[in-house]
Length: 197
Image (cartoon, rainbow, N blue to C red; front, side):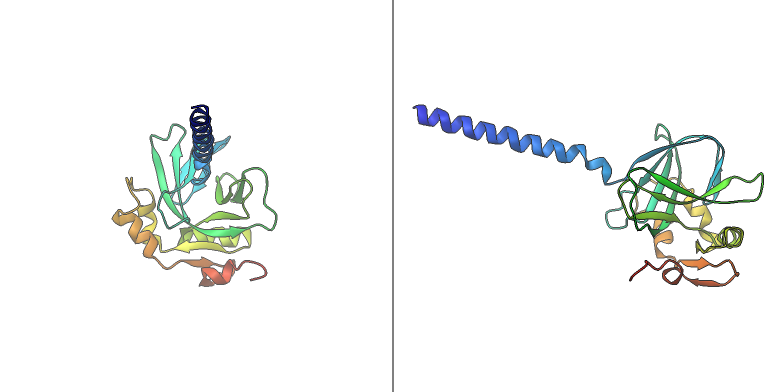
């Protein structure tokens, strides 16, 4: 009788340990979408629009297979400002904090978000801009900027409920390029090659 009680106690304790491990995994599930809350003290530009000074949420979209789609929401996540293509950006040393790189602009114009790095990651998300804007940013900053056809810019700001909608499918199918400071257009992999590869 005592042996049976002992075995039941062991099984019960193992169940508690397994449940605690499962809750621990769920607690870290938010890291998958890299949800990051930003507060900007001045207006900033994202592809296709300018966000006023304020607080916004950036997340990797829940697209299952594509980690290069980022969504920007209002602080309470009730308003979607856009769904954006990105290309992987690489840092040799990951940072323990969130990093946002901006493109410099002419005086009086808002800074444009170039890339976002989640804490601890070597790879970040380099935003893809419409071709004309990418060319201007490349020239102003003397570095290549990822680009997509100008006619797709409107698809980034369409409200979406899933990653299977036609506007997202059109973005995913497009051939991405990069605008160089010289005005030359090159393949995105040529412009953003990972060092050492």
